[in-house]
Amino acid sequence: MMKLANMNQNYHRYPLDYFLDSTVRCGLEAIELWAGTPHLYVDDASALEVAGVLKMIRQRNLEIVCFTPEQAIYPINLSAKDDTCRKRSVEYFQKCIRVTNALECSKMLVIVGFGFYNEPAEEAWKRAAESLHILAKDAEKAGITLVLEAMSNIGSNVIYNLDTLRRMHGEVGSPAMKVMLDTISMALAGETIEDYGAAFGEDLVHVHFLDGDGKTTAHLAWGEGIFSLDAFVDGLKKISYGGYLTLEHIAPKYNWDPEAAVRQSLATIGSKLL
Image (cartoon, helix red, strand yellow):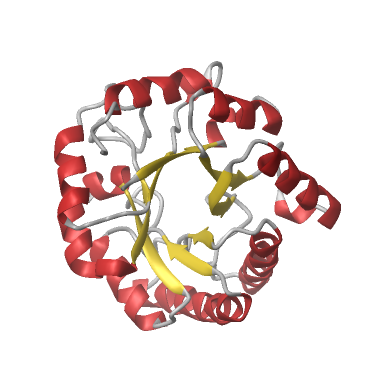
């Protein structure tokens, strides 16, 4: 049976304990932990701080289903042409793998970033693949599963749809690298859940489950966009997906009251996942 997980990215104007307590108030038992300031930024975090975060989570009987380091903005880019930036990015993710282990979490999300728009696409592709090969080997040793996400073509010119995700997944070819889907990026690329299921089968291990407007990358609460919840749920059932669905609400309007977005999604979803 599919289950929902809450995510803290839109709680960034509140402390971490507020997010954890909000998750409990909403009746959810799992979280995807976005690792960014002010909650837990990996480059600033000591081992003691990481242990403290795990303790806070365990005290509330919550499960961490995925560790998602901040990686979508400067200065992290696994496809960067600049050697210093790319080296820093790889080392950052290597530390993130260690933190994932310390948090007793089995999955870590990774995206490849982007290359320059005025260079041959294959150059950025090669750099991304080299970076992922390094991280996959580290993940294998650590017993961590990397979940590779395709961004929309607004966010990346390297992995931006199912075809490029499938190509990179096959090229890296590591048992420690699986894939995920984000309903926003999927819809913007004109793809379906059934397409992902056919392409990846059991290697599809994680989902960001949001409503959207079909035009922008806004990650909306269910009932606030144009997506068909019934069609998405039917698609997940058809491909026999049994993992977690993360409510990754991302829109400035949710900053003031992030819990309201969670409650909106839960009320709309109701018992449809059963």
